[in-house]
Image (cartoon, rainbow, N blue to C red; front, top):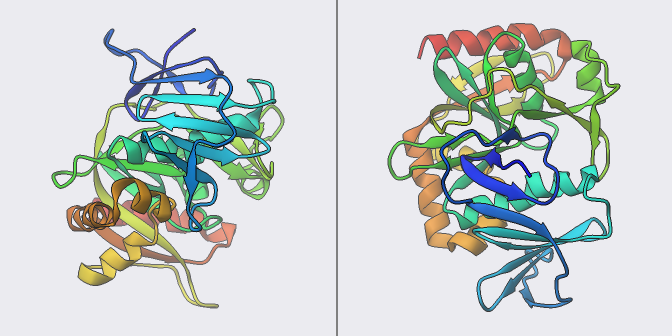
Length: 301
């Protein structure tokens, strides 16, 4: 069994995690162990806001992703109760998605719903709602030599000091439409559950698992019909308000961090990074110009 690295944590998993990078750090204790086993039908209570999370009295959490699996989660362990084969992509979609977000919150980091790349030595995150084009932009930037740091979940730590991004793994979730736009052949790429509308594109070249300072966050917005793409600042209260919308599943954060702590971390992050509105047309034919505009904006920072 080869240990893996995710968010800087040493992970020992009984389930395969081929998208992730192997652990190459010092020989230190394992941070998180992932095993397969049985979970009791009921361990605690569920709230109306988070019907898929069950909180036990001893602090353990059950993430219910039925029919895929149920996950018993603590800061240092994940127990997977499933009837699927260990290699099933649906399992990894849950493990490296909502379950990873729960682990981030439990271990004191704040996850953005964002991709992140390194441009000219600066780490920038690209945040937005599902389907906004975060991963598409990340691929376009990585194709120009900018190293991918994370996709979908951008875990931030170090607050209230310098915000640091914890790199997840060198994989990007792409729709088949995006693959066509980049001329990428989908054969051999693994579909991602539960809807299988996206596939996993793994790009290990240039991936660096070292936590890196986050300097800028671009918030994707749709441009009005006929309007040109533009990048504008979002400062003060506007920046906080827009950034808070892009936290990964905020109800989980409010539950696990408590509302005051969750609000404080979001406020601290907004104060520590440069927030930019990325107003763009989603048409692929304008993607190259948008990428160059981001590069210029970062260069002029």
